[in-house]
View 1 (tube, one colour):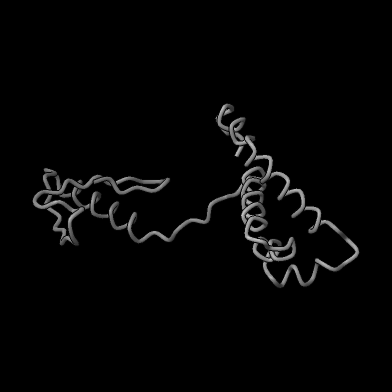
View 2 (spheres, one colour; view 1 turned 90 degrees about the horizontal axis):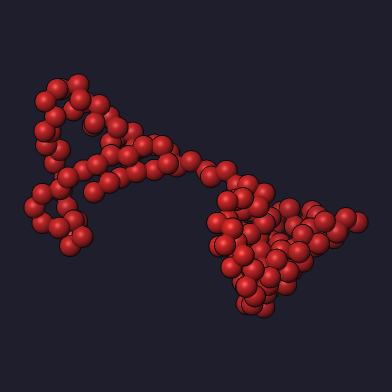
Length: 135
């Protein structure tokens, strides 16, 4: 079994019954000859299991795709643009910015929905051909 995240990996070799069948009790048995190696392996495992989750860094492109899919799903379910904006930006921000003189939020949701329709109607295939390296 390999436990990993984007920064570290620890390999565990399990003997006995399958881990997929039921909960298991794990006991660490070292085949490492040097005590320092064993200590390092246990420390790596503990670090991997106890490290707080890292918030992903979202690129502009990735956020555009995320919002496009949220807008498309929302419209398919009958949500208004304002309801979609609330999902993306939160109720507090929508209450502050939706009815002002600026239309940036309304325009952003409208564009997100259009992008979602474009992706749904085959635009995702172009991304697959490109390898989607930009986001």
